[in-house]
Length: 247
Image (cartoon, rainbow, N blue to C red; front, side):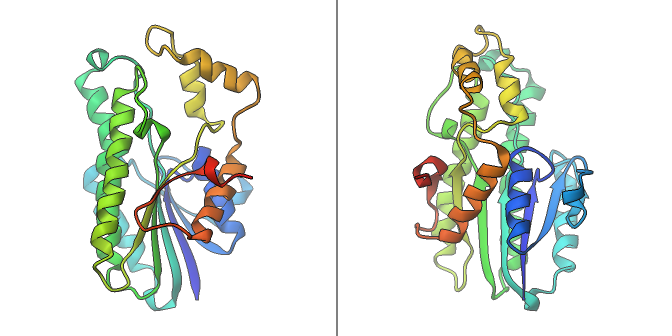
């Protein structure tokens, strides 16, 4: 029996930490991202190149993925909605129509669609099924200059809770949670630190976090999220903060 991880944005950042953690624990990995990771560690990873902002390609790509998996040979399957974007930092009125559409598409519409497709494709599977949504503390706390990011992540949190309520009514329904990874040393953090104080008034706090070596590395966060997944001592639909599980 095999264990599978399907992940969006698995080629870099938090995604690469998650790929490493699950692969090291015996999972077959299917990573969906805009580009391919050429490192040695990804030789055994099934990498699918897909622009997640192109809605019309999502269902066809996912159907092909599931058609290649023998559902009767699956012990467990995990889907992680990891891909996301901070978008343009600045007050809402300073974002263009395309800025707004892009961040809502990638952070909200695409995860909603992929969650729906995963549930439909696996509804008759008898294995253990799990969806993990990588959310953010910004879903619960508003930040100046991040209105689109905060709102799009808040939508993911509520989707997580509502889908859990639905799945609890189904025999062998899918478990679903959202996780706040905290402040991780990724390209997104680099983007934040380059912000002007006018567009993001809290920028100095994030600069200080980097300078004080307070950022979590991607390998550590990947392993921590894997361990939270494996622990499983939380309600379906839970919104979890990684920092709460650290000693």
